Structure formats: C-alpha cells, structure tokens
Length: 312
Ligand SMILES: [Zn+2]
Image 1 (spheres, helix red, strand yellow):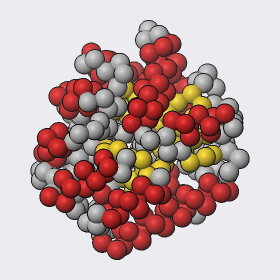
Image 2: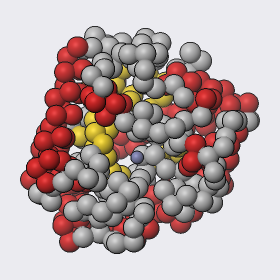
Image 3: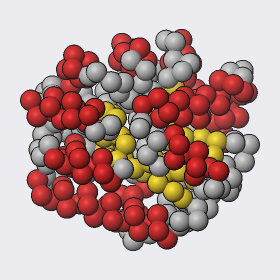
Image 4: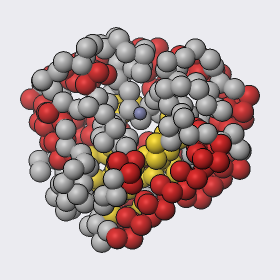
C-alpha cells in the first residue's frame, strides 16, 4: 500500500459479520483484516448499529450480543487487532504490529432510555455514540424527522461527557443539532457525513454545522455512500468525493476532515468499495495538489489528534 496509515471513524462490519456468521477475515465484506498490509497504522471504528425498530430490552440484548461477537473476534485475531480506548492504546497496538479497533454504537436506541446503560457502554470501551439513526429514539430524532432532543437526550449527553463517550451527530436532524449546540460542553463529531452544499441530502452537514463542529474542536468523517457523494447517487469518479474535501477546506476544515467510510453499511462506488482502496483516495488527494502533509492529516492526523485530545 502507498498509505502508511489511516483512521476510519465508521463502519457497520459488526452488523454484517454477526448476522451472517462471518469472521473479521472473510472475502465478502468491505473490511477484512487481511486486506490491509501488516504494519500499516490502521485504526478502524467498528460500530454496533442498533436499528430504530429495536426498542427497550430488545435493543439492549442486541447491543450485548454484538459486544460478545466483537470480543470473540478480538480473541480470535488477537495477533492482528487490539481494541483501543485512547491514543496510548493506539500507539501500543501499532508498536506491537497490530491494527487498532475502536468500538462505537450507532443509534441511541441501544440505551433503551436507561441512563445506567451509558456506564455499561463506557466499560465496554465504546468511544463514539451516534445519537440517532434516521428515525426517533429515546434521545432524539434522525434526519427524516423534525423533533429536537428529548429531556432524556439532554441528560444523556451530559452523562456521555462525564463517561468520556464522544457524541456523534451523523444522522441527527437539524433541530437536534441546534439543541445539542446549546448544551454540549465538549467537542462532538460527525463520524460519517459529507457536505450538504455539494450533495443536498439531509444526512449531510450544512456549512454552519460543519463550522460549528470545527470551532468546537471536533472532526468530520467523509462518507463513501454514493447518495451522500452526489445527488442521485451516480458517481464513477473519485473527483466527486474530492468536491466535498475542497468545500470543507474552503470552510477552514484543514484540521477537521477525516474518514468515515460507512463500509458494510452502504452502497459504495467501485473506486472506494474495499478497505485497501483508501490508497485511491490518498493518491487522488496528492494528484489534486493537496500535498502529502494535508493528505496525511485527512487520512490519519486529524482523527489521531482528536483521539489524543479527547479520549482518556
Ligand atoms: Zn450510518
């Protein structure tokens, strides 16, 4: 690989592998531990996606099933992958020649409206919690709705900040984003969202939202889902994704842009549809004249700095 290191803020690989009884090395999923050259400084977020339809104890049971699956894979591939909670863990994993695995949860339904679940997530090593998926849950409501945060949601955000779990606004609707800005005291992130100015999908960030995340010291992961790259989803050239990079750079996002592939949870165009194809993105950034330093910040440095500054 040309790429010496990269950090990906979002994938749904746990969902697919757990459902289809696959291991973290398999020929079917976008992410497989054998696709990236050993020694590459690769930190991968593995999110547990809890759908809006799973509620109450069902959601909690499903979350725990996925944690058991993740722990089983960590054990099976202990020579290749280590779970990490902070930058020191990331450094140690790389020094030992391993990849770094970051556990996350996508969908606040996982809490089932119980504040004590936040402590359970923290103990399991969950580092990012995507507050909503597309619809409503106990915390707030996603991008196909217009409700803001609930009272439980406001309290949950304060508790997440106490427990050192990072708030993820990808999927959150604009009303919820505005509510969050009033109460958040720590940086928050968008793990897998693009620019709404370039592709007008409500899952993407407005310029004002991007700037808010930037000003608070957060990061934004570029999403490879074709419908968030171009209106209508027809994209055959990586230059379409680079338009989002350029727009975010124009907004002063040099230290904010990161990667949030959405691997194994989305329809991804051929130029990026497998984890090792991050090389294509790196090469395209260089060919576009961004320079090595900036390309490496987008692939690795910005996310690494965020982890170092915000995860204990
Ligand atoms: Zn998602």
